[in-house]
Image (tube, rainbow, N blue to C red):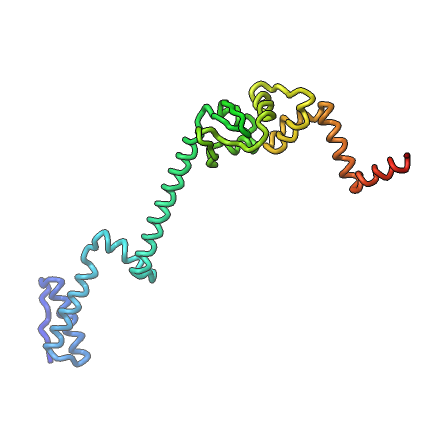
Length: 226
């Protein structure tokens, strides 16, 4: 079977048809099958060269990488969840910061105080500063005062120190020293360490650390002396 040669002025489509028909003849395909084969090759070529939509350009690389439609839906769902979680964290942070005003009402063991938030943040590494940093939700009483469950009388001395650097009298130095340790107020503890009441307690504690049975040893020494 012979096929007419395509003219030099023929279109590219005619040239493709001619090549397809020639190839079909070479492998023994009849004329009708050759026409169908040529048409199929032309449609395949047009589908490859046709411009793709934005959606297809986005999907094809994922499909080429072996990502199915179910996987793509899962990726999109995870992205939505992560975005929603970020928004929730941002809202919680803003809400928590708003809940701690510039002027803070306090209920400390039943004793009421009102102070500035900047006063409570005076020692940034303290637990007291962390409590009112806005990162943590503080419990309030029925009047809206922030509640701290500790001795309210001694807390007043802590506020005096944070406001003006004022130290308590000697009779209150030791309990205030202990309260300062609870709140992580290292500056106040260091200042109180040189007062007579606190210095005496520090010496006693060091003796106990050095001698594990200090109390028993002391009792035996006293008994022997008697």
